Image (cartoon, rainbow, N blue to C red; front, side, top):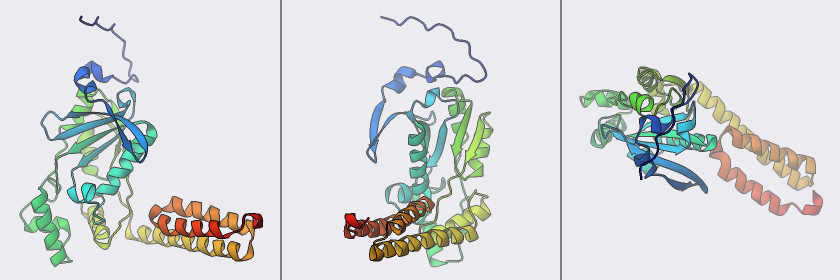
Length: 292
């Protein structure tokens, strides 16, 4: 039995277009399923890009949102799968997914553009050059290998989001001005949302600095990295110090202060979570409940 046609609906300037106005809704719905991530279920659907350059994953009810979060992410075997500390790909992807989950919706565009579009083998060759010569960054290494600094292409993404999914404006999770420019050129209104990922190794620090200086990525300067590191480690030290005083003097006020410092230390950055939480667990086990 064929479905009755839907009544025509007036569409104002602020009305988000539904996916079934410009897209094969039935085909998309066949991919609907849920994914459990960090004990939270996420409703999702997926569809390939028309040129088979990647896939689009729609989390939650993104088709009804006027201004959804969008992450355009190029495949990175080292960062996304192997958990490398030497690039920011993995942390950026995880932070983006967490942002979408918290908002209840979002769109991930996952592109098959490994190694900034040069491929995994060229990427590996470039990394070998940078490790042999520390004066080289990965952009200079690509030059020596005869490749562009960044050969990735985003030209099909904007039209897909605008014409196929019917979006008018997005919040683009990126530090890369090339992505903002490419998506804006399609006619979408783009609100850039920076992803200030902290480097987890010396190589990552150098890579992020090269991206900031050579590709104009929106990233903090080394001075800010140093200041933030000093602040978070100072706060963790203060937490441990005040907690120790609370333990030795059985002082409830000092104990409460140590918990407040712990909270703010974890807000600054979660890299201190393991040592501080282990210490706090020890503290709670050794303070007698009647002493508090």
